[in-house]
Length: 220
Ligand code: DC
Image (cartoon, rainbow, N blue to C red; front, top):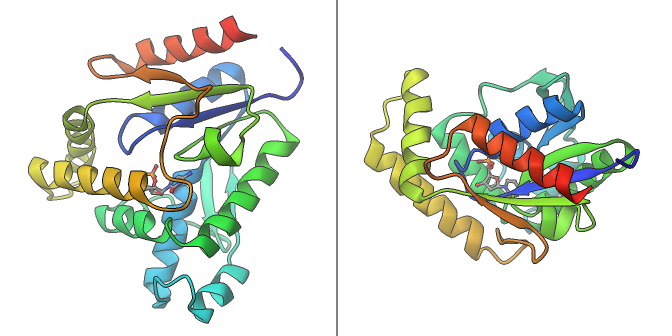
């Protein structure tokens, strides 16, 4: 394999992108970059600081100019603070989806993400990695699963964390976010022409990790 290579993993919410990407990163000994966590961090900060969700508002530009996002040993750091947990609530999921349609937010995050993908081998997951952020990635995977399966996985995770959403609410959220992500004007979620689709419905984590590793090894 060449010295530096990039793997793009895109797909809808709850398809298992981050679980799979983390395991593949470990198997290949490369860095994992969770771009959804970056949109979550921005949505969280905008809400906390009362910044309007309006692309033309000068307060948004000012906030973004003063925002620093990085990953350090698997933790996401927003302005020097670890925000792993506070960005994983259903409320922040919706805020992330909303802020991700704002051009200034996407411009800022895409620039940071491209920088992260230039220096070393990475696996990056999100919605527009294969179509926009890393268009020339050596490997592109589009990970899917039925909305019902994605909702039941998310529902289980939330229950374990003590969240009180019902399955129906989680399914509604997933469908709403799919709609937002696929219909937004800027870099909507869609499969890159040269991405390989992997449907994870009914398949366990290990099986999917093996499928992805096989794709990467066979394409080398
Ligand atoms: O993957 P996630 O659920 O953590 O992503 C949170 C939101 O961020 C999701 O609704 C869509 C948005 N997002 C995006 O627009 N582009 C990306 N590359 C990653 C996430």
